Each structure stands twice: as structure tokens, then as C-alpha cells.
Length: 267
Image 1 (cartoon, rainbow, N blue to C red):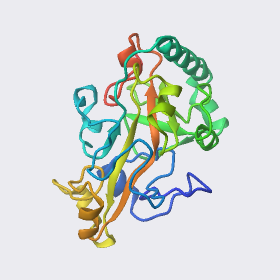
Image 2: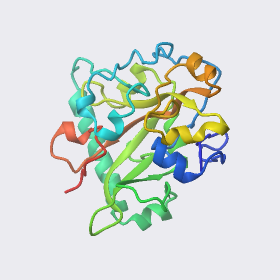
Image 3: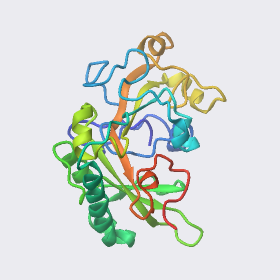
């Protein structure tokens, strides 16, 4: 495939620009649902200031909470802040986890997920974690939050089983406010993240994605529209949607809402 440019009409209608190997290995985009590489004609979103390359919602100070894969994208990610705990926050978060766990029960057999409309993102590419994405749930999540209908199911590739269910991913529209995200899953308990400030390489420089010190892409040094356009690239303020992973089989809340996908969350 290539740069995942998803239209308003079909969120998973991907336009071919680069080879799958190049974009997936270099940029680590694994067909996450949402409006990929979408630019709605504005450089900022509600609650987010993109001009300086960082979001006001989160300054990436807590990189220790992330695995190497996500931490390597510093400058290209926005993370919600930790808000003061309010009455009812823990109960609300626990209810989301309970609903996620209940929804996952059916999908321990990945074939049932396929039967229910989930699609494996890049099944031919060997990955430690596979996203099974549901377009209908992704669309619905823009309008309301239903923990029983996750946008994605997260499967682990283990030594004995290729698809072992370990968690779910929920999404919210890319211009969601801090208040709206907090209403879905309290920000005193968990943190949402979004991929931002993506500079798409011009056609004759796509190999830069694989460079030791790339300028373009999710690991690139370019974080602003001005720098991107000066290099002949196309700037995208954000990729996909706001998203959050939930791992109900973990025993403590930090691991349940972990931002580290480099370790297994099913034991």
C-alpha cells in the first residue's frame, strides 16, 4: 500500500503512493483507522496548537511510559495531560475496561472477528501486534463512544499462536477536545494519543524514510509546515484519529492503559 490517505467517504480507501514495505518498515504506520494523512485545511485543532510542533494537550514529557517504538516518534505525537482525579473517574474507567473485556470474549477466536467485519491490517507483514480494524465501528466512534464496539482488536503474535487477543483500541475524531476525550475515558486515569506533524516526502525522495537520520515521516526531523514545504514535502497536521489502547487482561491500571506496545499484554 502506501501513505494511508483516507477520505471522508471511505475511511479505509487507501490510495497507493509507495510500496507497503517502504512505508510500513520506515514509518511504522499499521493501517490505523481514521482519516489518515487528512488535512482539513487548518493547522490547528480544537485544544491543540500545532504551530510549534507540539500539542498543548501533551508535551511528551513522560516518554518513560512508552515503548521504544512510540518514543522514537517524539515530535510527531500528541498525548493528553494527566488531569486531577474527580469523583467517579475510577469507576468510569473500570466500567470501560469491563465492557472491553466482555466484548473481547467473542473474539479470542480471530476468525469470529473476521466474520464480524474486522479486517487485518497488513496481514502479510510479520508484526508483534496486529490491528484488526472495523470500519463501521470507526465511523460510529466519531459520533459517540460505545466501549462494546472497539475500533480495533489487538492481537499478539506469540510463539505458539499467531493471533492471540490482548486488547482493544478506541478512537475519537481527530479534532476532539480534551473535555470530549475526558468524557469517554477519564484523563486522570488514562492518556489518549494522536500522531501529528507528518511531512510526506516528495516522490523522488521517498527513500529518505529509511535513512539513518530521516527528514520525512514519523521518525523525521521535520515537525512544521514551513520546514516541510521548504523541502518540497506535503505537511499533514495529524494522522488518523485520537486513539487509546486498553489491555483488560493486565492486573494494574497503568498496564491496562499502557502506551507500550513493544511488550505483550497477555500472559
